[in-house]
Image 1 (cartoon, one colour):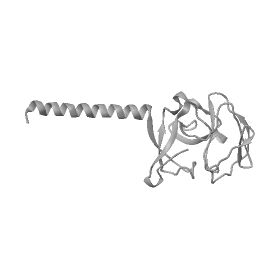
Image 2 (cartoon, rainbow, N blue to C red; image 1 turned 90 degrees about the vertical axis):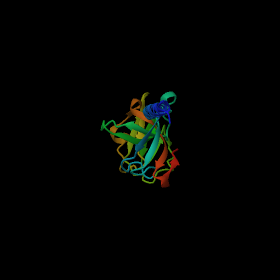
Image 3 (spheres, rainbow, N blue to C red; image 1 turned 180 degrees about the horizontal axis):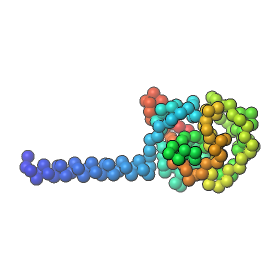
Image 4 (cartoon, helix red, strand yellow; image 1 turned 60 degrees about the horizontal axis):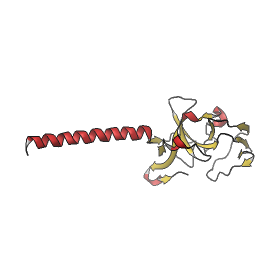
Length: 173
């Protein structure tokens, strides 16, 4: 093989690798990112060690909706990212009485819950720019019942897919 063709092939391979690395970096930084669930606060929906794919563009044009699972920068431990379910959005009033969540005075159906035990929470108004989040495993979840409202600016994105382990691959609702 002539040397010029070998150099051309090597240059093409290096260019392809550089472009692939740049694209991977951009996608991970701005579009999708994988997060590992740490802890048991989202049982039975998410298990410790599950890996979820997060859409970082989900809330660029829209806003989080009640029931969506989000990943956010912890308001308590700055070096950690947490995962919880959105319960209250701006304009809502959220309360918990006898282990039942109420949004704007109406019972919020939670068929995904297995562990309901929760302290009562007096009505909390969710102002613009904030969310009220809960873990699905209420007895052990450290969430808005304890740290209060979550600033929307702390939200990284919406978890939409469990991709690991293979036996648990599924879309999140």
